[in-house]
Length: 198
Image 1 (cartoon, rainbow, N blue to C red):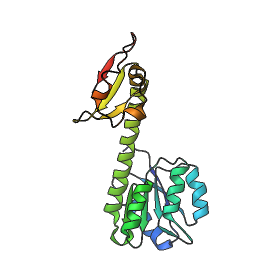
Image 2 (image 1 turned 60 degrees about the vertical axis):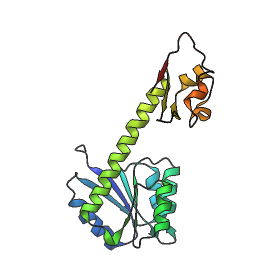
Image 3 (image 1 turned 135 degrees about the horizontal axis):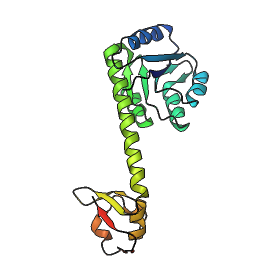
Image 4 (image 1 turned 45 degrees about the horizontal axis):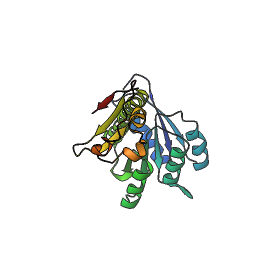
């Protein structure tokens, strides 16, 4: 982690939970945290849409609304920072739904403490950084002039760049998941293109 404070947005309509989380954040060893607290669903939507926080902690119960709905809104508006859903009572179905919707974690408040919250935030931030590096590397592979594709041990295509599309005359949506041997006869070598198989 760098020396900049971690900007945390907590969306929770319970004053006691705010105080508890504020105190836990002050105990963190991973770095200083700047906590902003919002207790209103509609205001939270506006603040999240500004995308100025490093991580979001959303309570599941938010009056007539819920944190899962706010999570989906956040993803739809392009929020790329990790979002952790907090709940007073654990519910396996909501847990699974939250993960499918893009939550970095789902934590029960009754089992929560400072070290667990710190670990969850640290892991979520590290995963997000790793995902960003992978996206950057994939973008570099996509602009390479060499045909590059990645296959698994069964020869199924996992990745197919734009130069491979040109070389083989096959769009990546048609190639991914297929066996590499299916493209051997379709290969069209162009003088400026080379083939790289990983």
